[in-house]
Image (cartoon, rainbow, N blue to C red; front, side, top):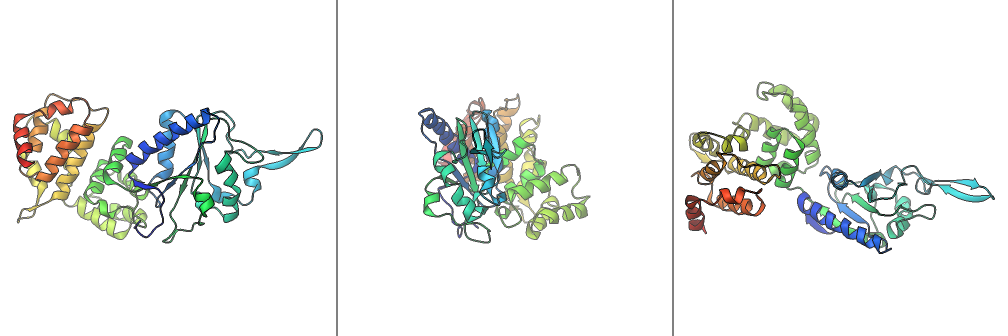
Length: 368
């Protein structure tokens, strides 16, 4: 979907974009401390990826003030400059709009969907982007500007930016990545059945109607339906209210197909008797015993995210069960190697120690 669209900057998943954005904003604060103007940042991406939410969560994480502004709502320049009034001595001054922050930062001014504004409004914002102020008001100290934008091309109703505006920004582009989304979704408490579905069918995400935003909305609607298969008609209607027909059809097949959800990280790690047969059942389909790499991949990703979370604490049964899972004959060799590598690199404290097992070492070394 993104190949025909005009995007600027490196194309990053949410995790890498957040890390880069944090670096840029910290550097901007150092720039402001030197008395210089910090460059604004523009995050490009298709609809429904969570660009706005990512910026809001970043401000919340650091305890920074946050101010939201949608330039597409501006009808005239007075919406930016504020209204003129007469001060004592018959001097004309402007009262800044109430969306303009007044207190000192650190803070982020978000210009959301900036290129959905009219061309005249975009031109009127040039001074704000260049100097951090308008002729009628200035941003308080330690305030930084971030804009979001939909790409040109496709069916987006956007106003093209000329080179003078484009070169005022530092640019990043956000792309959908199932693993990054799943990490956020687990932390945000999204229905785990939905997380498992996205990990099994990531190719269905980021289309016209099926986006991370609409999927999250759908998963919220089914959260309190304990047996989705028993309420399949309602689930079908709810799915069609938010998603494309192909996505709904895939989800209906998913809930009828022995969900990968049935084997959660806790099922694997906390079991007193390792669920060897359940792993084997999830890994095969039908009488022919076709290998279901999608299911095993979803289970592996959820397990990796669980073991990488800052809140993870190793339990008594965890080391042995983790090793037995990685050694399971139904785990494809490339998936086993990738998971072992990622756990060593990203696992929470104590996870690397859990991987120090002679049986596992022999298999891993034998596959290299």
